[in-house]
Length: 266
Ligand SMILES: [Fe+2]
Ligand SMILES: [Fe+2]
Image (cartoon, rainbow, N blue to C red; front, side):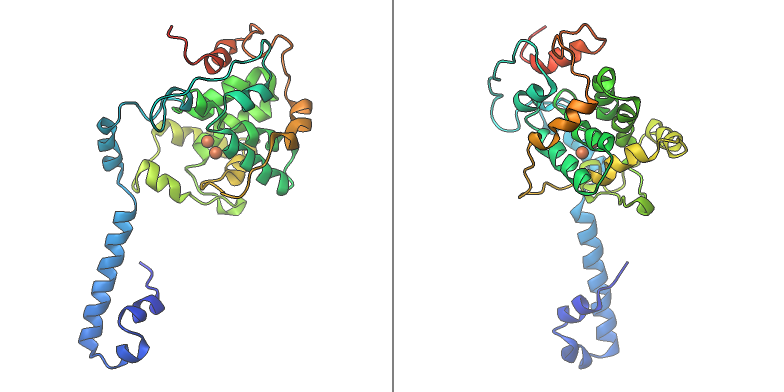
């Protein structure tokens, strides 16, 4: 464990006060300091077992999509969708919980000079969370697959596994947020580990990796990029179906309808 000398000395009343202490008193103080640090480190994040204990404290499951659960009080009535909804309509009318996060991420990718397909992958990477949170990378890739390039779908699908594995060379550090969300001692499931091993060797490894690098693990309060910034990229790389998303008879049309009509009981 790192000892911050200045913090330690300040705790003793400063270097002069520490100088007046006996060696034994200093050793005791050091031990106490280390214990406090250790306890704080443990108190800061729950363990995976503590996270599991929280399951029965909620009326919903953590994997439920944002559209299906109110964070406070009851869910709200949703505005109607146009007859032939576009991706932009979904952003404006349904991606309530994820839009700002993915816009911030795409904005970061744009500012970092990323290729357009990476910017698009960042813009779409977490939007499936409004439908379902479990395995959101796979759901997201499936949702977009008929309308984007194979590379973009690959980036969306595998960012989910890669975010658990540090890659300092490419600028990705394990996020503190996950110690909070999954528990400080969380170990990814074997299928995630196997996916990571496969993607690590894949020629497109950098596609999903760059999504994680440009992802944000804390809400940036004063950054509110708008969709207008990305309409050209969407126009060039997203094949909008003329019948509207949900009505083009594609294999994923029902997924778009589920996002459009989450109040349908059956
Ligand atoms: Fe994600
Ligand atoms: Fe994200």
